[in-house]
Picture (cartoon, rainbow, N blue to C red):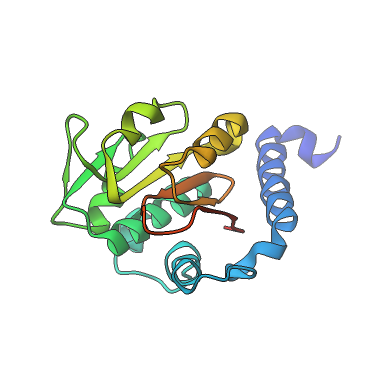
Length: 185
């Protein structure tokens, strides 16, 4: 009998590995900000989304599975970059977001949005009503509901959108030209 047939968890692990490699290969043209003309957007991709240097809090995130760890480190970097005073957490990412900005507090209700991390299935229309020009929203699991993610990208209030496959980042800034990017994350 074959070794892998005796250990189904290995099949599952190999499936996740091949899936992650397939996603990476399908987006290789979008590595490290290639094709982004805006210096601000390029810097965000290079130094926030795809930052490879270890941060001080990464050791606190040990023990998570690879995708939770990868997304948690991203949430940490976005909170560290944005430095919000109020965070809306709808996906259980509080420890990552607060590690990135220790002065922030988690909102109990929807307030003016500075930084929000929510599921793609949440009511984005209601959330967008509370956004300002400094708002940043991270939508988790956009790959599960691509049509809804496209609606969010085409909403006139969402100025800059980053599609990272596992999550999407929406930045609001009415002074900027609307733009959407696919990023190999």
